[in-house]
Image 1 (cartoon, helix red, strand yellow):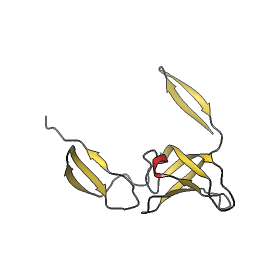
Image 2 (cartoon, helix red, strand yellow):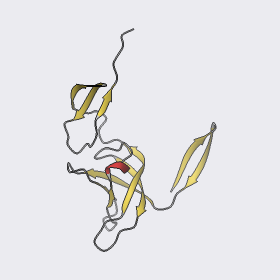
Image 3 (cartoon, rainbow, N blue to C red):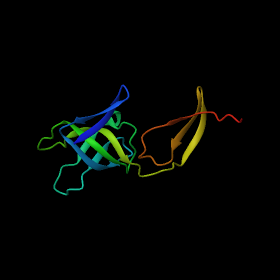
Image 4 (spheres, rainbow, N blue to C red):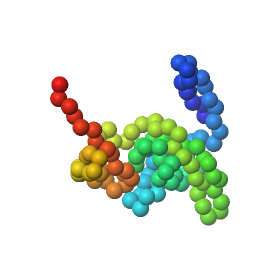
Length: 121
């Protein structure tokens, strides 16, 4: 799989091994799997810290960082979000010490968003 990166105003191609495409499926318990289109392929476990801002249902590119064993799925990290599953978000908003935070109503979305104050011109 190849990626384009921009460095010093120029683009260059990077080839990475062990990168697969899949659809992210997350649990309210805090774990996620990248489900590959090939039914015979292993699902790839992704820790919350390796989601890279991906949400449940997103189509992603995942790099395998730890091979699986007989009883365990391979582990990976999200390298790129190809397509968002949800262009909008329903959340509860609460004021915190450092501004407002939005907490998604869908408990499979494992994050809070910091909201910026809108300024009228």
